Every structure is written in structure tokens, then in C-alpha cells.
Image 1 (tube, rainbow, N blue to C red):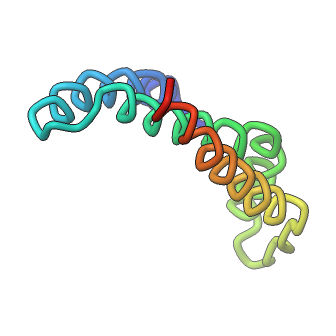
Image 2 (image 1 turned 30 degrees about the vertical axis):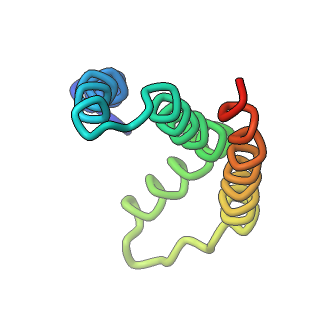
Length: 103
């Protein structure tokens, strides 16, 4: 399970990304609204893909570490959830891109 140091890094990573992303986008001449849209969409996709299955995946990892001689069977629901929700989030982001361009 994650340590307190790892939890702090997971909390600070999006903020640090935001602090470095905006100046970099401005210097390169990218649109700030489009940059924030893509960054927010990617972060939201991680949450949607990982949050519902995090406990099951963590339990599988813990079980594999406790019994390295036995292979933990693949959890097909988790695999399909990650693929399906990631595809849905990407599709939604592509659909809403048009509204960002005109809004």
C-alpha cells in the first residue's frame, strides 16, 4: 500500500504539473484554455479509469507479493473497465473539443 510519502506525491503531482504546464504552454504559444482542457481531461481520465477498481487491483498486487510462487489470475473486469472507460473518456474529450473551440 502507498506510504504517506507516496500519497503526498500523488497529491502534489497534479498541482506541480499545472504550475509548470501553464508557463510552458504560454512560452510555446499554445492556447491556455485548450492546454487546461487537455490537462484536466487527462487527470479526470486517470480518476475515472483507476478509482472504481483501485481496491481490487491493490488486493491483487498485495496477494502477488505475498505469494510470489503463485500467479494471481487476471481480473478481466478490471482490464475491460480500464480499456472501456479510457476509450469513453477519450471519445467524450474529442466530442467536447468542438464546444471549446466555439465557446
